[in-house]
Image (tube, rainbow, N blue to C red; front, side, top):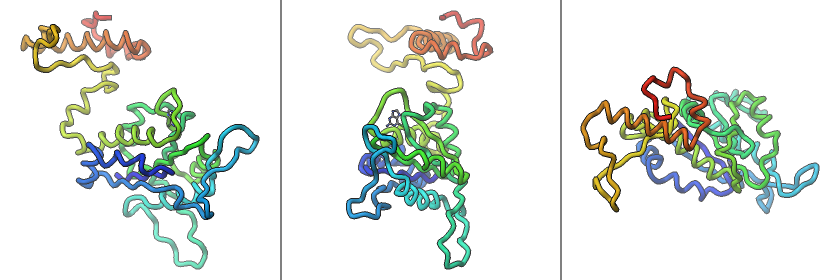
Length: 263
Ligand code: 6GU
């Protein structure tokens, strides 16, 4: 998978050199490129924003700067993704970049979930356009959609950040760990919160068996695997009902069994 990030704060994305994402890059599973939006400005001050039409507070990012950046970066997909330009003295027509998915992190987007992560993990090429200030001129999303690009406006939750950089980091980590070969133990991909069960994860314990006067639940030391599975399921149900009641309401009736008495 190739991922491009366009931002006015490329240093924000330095964290992508670390951890699993960093290892996946080193191993060639993830081809990640971070770009400075100001490289596509044309004025001495490298201006990326201007005042909003219609008035109001704050600044809006200019579509012309974003357009130059995204025309280039969307055209930089994986090999084989870019049609050869016909020999011509005309400027090359904008490539129809439909092999790429353009992610616009915005608090006005759909809320990003594990389902979005799973879906984005199947893309060959993801481009993250990180906005700052009051956002990016709305014609940017409109134009690339009209061009046939798969455009996703996504939020990471109901709170306001200063820009899309941290949201892009969150989404790249969530997507990156689903890319085959990136997580050491594929079992840890199946058995996890927000996975197929639709429940939060059960509580986990390790050594020592007694710590600050608190004992690990006895059943976990019993070696009785059926009882352990039952206990974990009950704890997951109890925890989900207490913290995320809307997840219990959304459970498929068939997903509950007659032994689910913890609720
Ligand atoms: Cl994607 N961007 C900003 N600026 N704030 C957010 C967000 C994104 N998601 C939640 N809050």
